[in-house]
Amino acid sequence: MKLFRLTNNGWVGNFAIINNKVYVLLSDPVTALKLYSEGKEVPLGPEVNVNVDELLNRDYTYRGLRFTRPYDPIEVWGSGIVYEVARSRYTEEDVAMIKGKTIYELVYDAERPEIFFKGTANRCVGHGEPIAVRSDSEWTLPEPELGVVIDSRGKILAYTVSDDVSARDLEAQNPLYLPQSKIYNNSCAMGPFLVTPDEVGNPYDLTISMRIIRGSAVVFEGSISTSKMRRRVEDQIKYLIRDNAVPDGTLLSTGTAVIPPRPITLMHGDVVEISITRLGTQRTPVIKLGK
Ligand code: DO4
Ligand code: MG
Image (cartoon, rainbow, N blue to C red):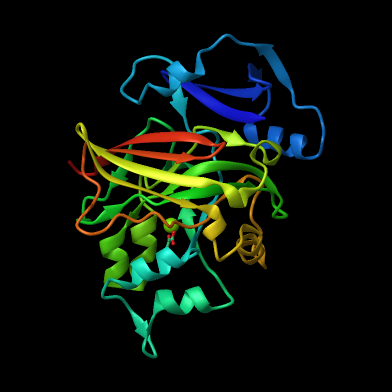
């Protein structure tokens, strides 16, 4: 089952795709995912005749029916330095060190993963909606990641495409600035779909790819396989929920490994395109806040 939401002029509707047919969903997405994960019936309304591919081509400037974030997570969390590529690329900067090693090298080798709070629904956007560069950041990057939606016990209810947009200059300046680097308006993108585990299969054979498009040029292109994850998703979830009561529908963004080199930074007017096998393609325009 795949879930998505459409919006039009303030109205938001929930939909489910089952066996290539689109239905109105009569519950909120998290309730539907919980029921589905327990093998119970998901409350569906009538089948609807919508052209999903055509809707995916619209963005937030379109006046009419278009995609929005697939649900409203109460909490969003992130994991860091999950891949070897992230360890080495983060270490290229002049960053904080402890006993001769960068904090990124240390956390990569440590038993405890880096887990950080990433935000709340109001900081998240969906497919076709703008991600943002902070007004006080000169170096901001998208971070294409496998997103997992979990219940309060840590069971995976769905997967999605997530973008942990980060003000890399703030983070490199001082680790104490991490919350400001990670949490601000439009700093997280998810969707277009929530896809249940039975449709995703093995989460460790997915390709995550990203393109940054500026005008008619592709200024960055890269990809990675989730088989390269050093920190398994189960391990990340174990630490996230340890002594920490998360609500049903918590989104965990499981770390990046597609990292554009300097001097690439997101700029107002760019478009970020992230694709993950079996999860679809997320396209988000970029805005600079305070402009
Ligand atoms: O503190 C670093 C954050 C790293 C991160 O977000 C990632 O590896 O995806
Ligand atoms: Mg990240």
